[in-house]
Image (tube, rainbow, N blue to C red; front, side, top):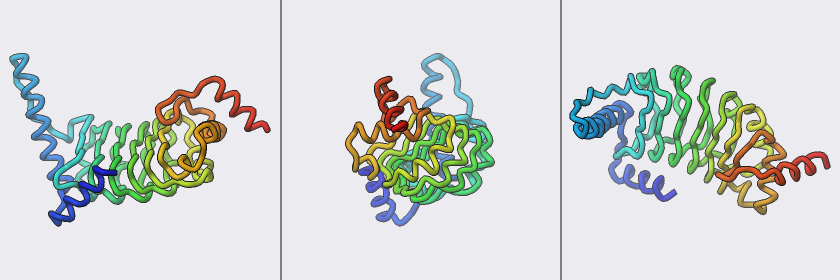
Length: 223
């Protein structure tokens, strides 16, 4: 929360944001310098970095921050892991579906309120903690999603889990701590309640489910 507020404040003070195009250029330059240092240690030379050819691109904590996901992201044709965390993005932009290889999308510590434009059939991990999300509609399109990190958001109802997360057959790792739903329950009730609804989970909030918890969830479900 601190980082989001800090970046928002700085952006407001500066009255400007960085474009995706400029962020990509900055990342290419910084990544080239990093690889150049590594290459020099081995007596080698580093090749120029072209984001359009890279599988991992991290536009994280840009200064000034990003506030939009614009069409320049579509130039990242090979990207598998796209990092956009710690910025001031308030909306998930359209066009991500054209990133056919995208498997990991990191949007944590932004200002996102709605899960939209997630037509990503190959996405396996979504990191979207520390935002302002209240509803989970839109996630049910992610049939290959196995990891969902969305702690510190604003989801308050079991019905959101039942309507949308039960539609994710591959989901095994969920981080949901510090949502109103979790804060309003005792820890055992929360963990068992989640497992009752999502029996495929192997881990919740970084802690693996114990056999005893699975047995309790089965009894509660049957009862």
